[in-house]
Length: 122
Length: 112
Figure (cartoon, rainbow over the protein chains, first blue to last red):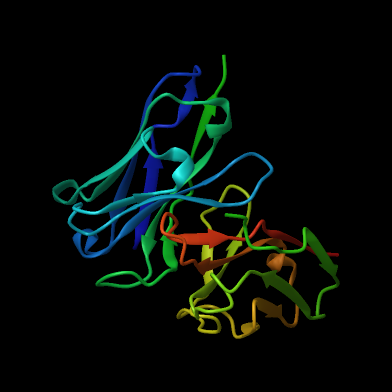
């Protein structure tokens, strides 16, 4: 079964850090671009970051640049999001998602995880 | 860059059909055929139901169809069923140098 399972969310104080993980199974992880997408409470989806199959190219939404870092370990079929200097408006459910095709970009995501909740509050 | 524009909610009865609109610009929906739609039930993983404007992934019901005209995409669900009650998001490629895709704000479908 193709599956993505996120973990690592929790409650963190403003200015703190968290590292999210996403464990992939059921497909050749190293073939695909991977993404993080978030959903703030009561709001819609927001694309956060992407990383190419080999990890050599990354992209981020402008508002997050410099605070979040996406990475992957193909040997562990895992995706990561290091989040530093967290702010209350980073509070959201964070989803990992798989690009809809390979190689390259297909601009849709065909497999998603259920998400992990990050709450930034003092 | 602003999100794609969707109605906040739509309501209909079982068996009826509904259409959800998704309005963008010439930088996204208008100039590219990379529009996709996702169904999201609370607490679950979002599910891809349409990609590349009108293509259905394997296993997605033919009751779901979609199209695009100029800068507006649309999702139609026919023969509504109670399990269709969910939030639906559109998404599009954007030629913004810093974004991969742009999402709509989501439309809550109520099946009364």
